[in-house]
Image 1 (spheres, rainbow, N blue to C red):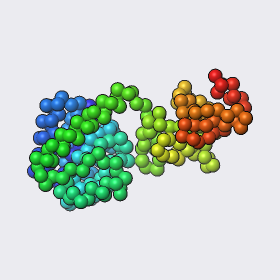
Image 2 (cartoon, one colour):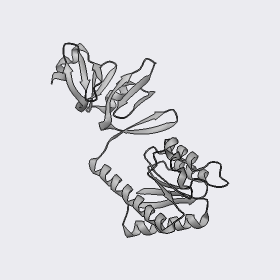
Image 3 (cartoon, rainbow, N blue to C red):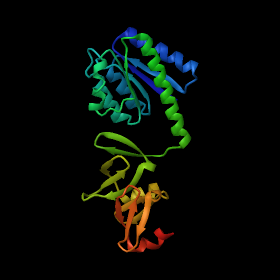
Length: 242
């Protein structure tokens, strides 16, 4: 069941959001529940620290009297829940671009000046999330979880091309479809954890098998589907040919 968190400084609007969301959850029989409804960013973050899991967050931007605004809260939530759904509900429609500047990957930005439109948008967000979660569960998506600095990331396994040791001790580079990450780790441990989808083609390279486009025997290189190349060891030739 997906938990829903509401952080809104105006009590009247906070209660209205909660009432409407609870009604929609009941009507559409959604696997969701209101876990916390508060005006305090600290209370929300404390709950996440106590019960870490993927959630849905309806956040105000301004949060009068709080130690941080909605964008700062969104950044803190992302450190704890990289795959959570952020939705901003605010009177400041012209601040929508700020969600991109803060790299928050918000699902939507809802204006609360028009109550009826706000309710319609709240309902639409729930349906979009339900459909997305259902699709992911149907695909049985697998993720590789990695911590970089103070942020926890979840990368779909089928988007990872390979892992490689970097020039620094105990550092690993992850090469995926849309990004490249550097983190502390061991190729040996990754090999044990990710077999059989990944194969250790070289002491410094762990490659996802279904991302291999071709094998160049003369140069002893693997060409991946994204065009990148990885060397392979002489003793891996027969294994790769299989």
